[in-house]
Image (cartoon, rainbow, N blue to C red; front, side, top):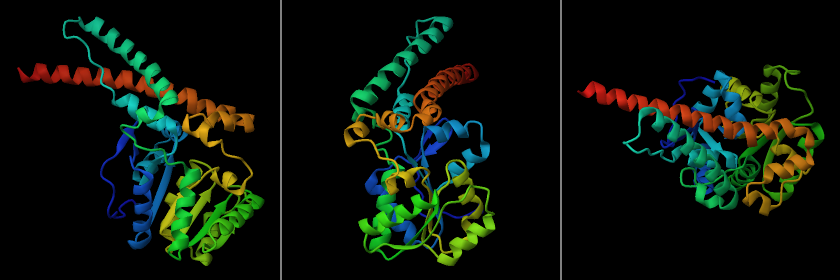
Length: 313
């Protein structure tokens, strides 16, 4: 995909979490963007950014660039909503403190904010949505995209996932949206076992308007970035990761009440204990990384402010 691609109507306001851009939009805004993307004559890709993405991007510069270049980087995870709220909270210190005491106080204040905002995010989630207004789960937005494509006679291609899973997903979508046009599916292969050229050729024969790719991050996002401009009919490409498993019914989603109180990860862990390490990254390592980042950035900002005062004399 060419990096100099011109983008029309790009949302200007973004939230940065550890150097990763997130578009703070609502579901209604998202649906409007999908309609626009299907009509504007350009190609677009959407990234469903979650805490795991940000952890991966911390050590994978290419992946970080790809996320930040996306036409839409949506918050797929309550962890991002919490992080945006936590990072935005100011850290005020009395001007009467000594430099060392002020530094220790700031660190203690940030630690208090960490525990307070985590509790608020669990007990009263709506209070955390002052920066990012809404979580847009990849498992939910695929239905929005499918509905819009069905209503506007656009076609869809499912790429990736196990063979039976992609077939079941197709049957479910055709049942949910009788007017949907699924121009093809290609599953049952191991990533890297088929060349990019073969997969691109398969997609191009079907000539879809929308491409869902279920190959897992960061592989699926890198694949889109490398190959989107080789598939001229594709107007929107989205990496949907494990959402195909939810769509097919292979994996059940958490009850709505668990989703509302941000415990969907716990339900997923009970169903799939083998995901322990991945869930640990999202619910433990990510908050720790965000906490450490805020300490470093708070001190950096304070030092920069002090230097500006010195230089102004």
